Image (cartoon, rainbow, N blue to C red; front, side, top):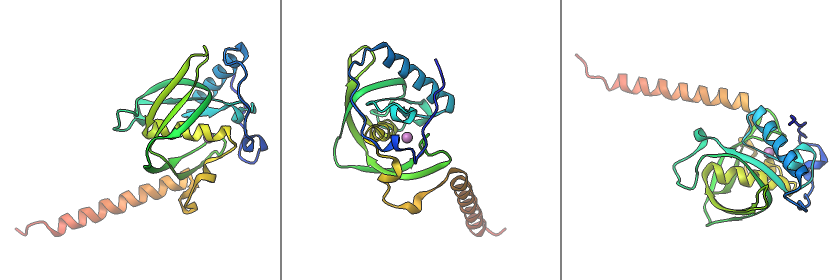
Length: 196
Ligand code: NI
């Protein structure tokens, strides 16, 4: 097992369309997937695609941590999952907007529109077929990782670049906004307090 070096935005490997994995049961693919899971967990990421570790093949790893799960029954927690040669299609028309980050674009976040529900298919390390319908965070992480296999990074999916920034600044801005709202609420309740 090894921690792998992650390619950052600007590296041309992140812009290419990756080739299918010829044999998903190849021990080298198993080793690569294990290293990718270790690398993802080391950084605390939710997903990692092979081109991000300089391997232009169609596979990615991801997980859905319990704290990321939403209310949909299709948004379930999932341990480390390897998906090889995936196919992806949206289910329905609904689009959701939410913040994303990427291990290849460290320190930044952007708000990205994605299909609210998707169906994905692929194979696992034993060559077993995998097919699921996913919603919420689960659907989002799979769409983000799948895009990496086609050379697409999340800023290329963004429709409002005003919603793109450094995580640190965005968190500070959100904290300031929450504080201002709290103060406004306190003021409002003080005004409404009965006079004794
Ligand atoms: Ni990414």
